[in-house]
Image (tube, rainbow, N blue to C red; front, side):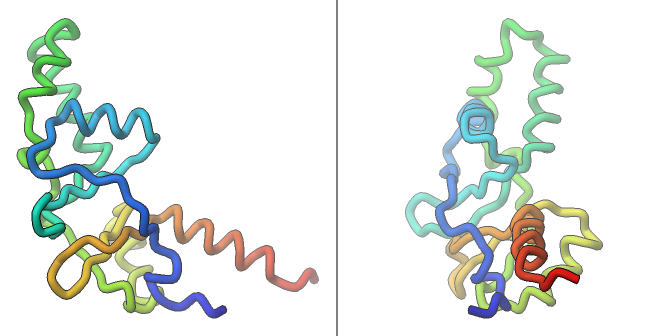
Length: 146
């Protein structure tokens, strides 16, 4: 089987949050599941609204710690809505997009993930830089030994 499109390597079983989730929900999910990107989707339509990155989450938590201290962190995290801190200006791609077209996105933008949506903007999957590393490892294993 030839690996040529984003759909060939993307993750399809994603952990997501709805638009009414709190920073506390996101923080817990990232910590418990060891993930760095959480797509936020409209719970009714399934449309992708944005992506919360670990970097943005940590920056927000650090700001809360600096402003309110450790004792107030959990309460303050519950008050922050993910919709207020997601990256809503993000790029998405169709699952049929050739891998050769998305490589420059990762190299030039230094982003760790690219969301995959259908024609209506519903989340279908995500491709990450780690997916490319796994693909590289598989291709290296298949390479004839010199």
